[in-house]
Amino acid sequence: MSIYTYILTMAVTTYLIRVIPLTIFRKPIRSRFLRSFLHYVPYACLTAMTFPAILTSTATIISGAAALIVAVVLAYRGKSLLTVSLAASAAVMITEWVLIIVK
Image (cartoon, rainbow, N blue to C red):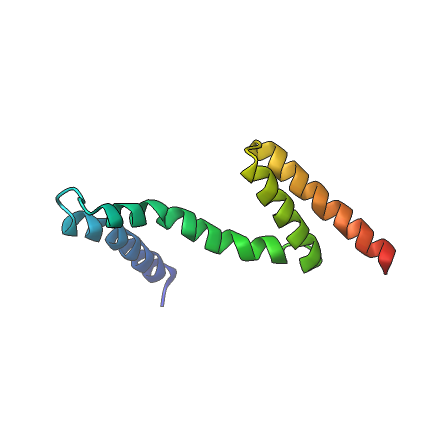
C-alpha cells in the first residue's frame, strides 16, 4: 500500500471521530451525569498518557516516583506550573545522585 492510502485512512478516521458526535447529538445534552462525565474525559485521558511516562522516563522508577510525589504535593498546594516542573526535575536529579552514591 502507498503512503497516500495510509494518510487518507487516518484523515477519514479523524474526521469521522469529530463528525459523528455532531450528527448524533444535535440538541444540548441535558443529563447532568453525562455532562459531568464528558467534562472529565480529557483529564482522564491526559492522566492515562502522562502517568506511565513519568515513572519510566527517568533512569529508575524510584526517581520517577519521587518526582511524581513532589509534583502532586506542590500542585495540590496551588503552586505554579513552572514551580512544580522545576521542583520535580530537581527531585529527579537529587534522587539520581543519591542512588549513584548509595551504589
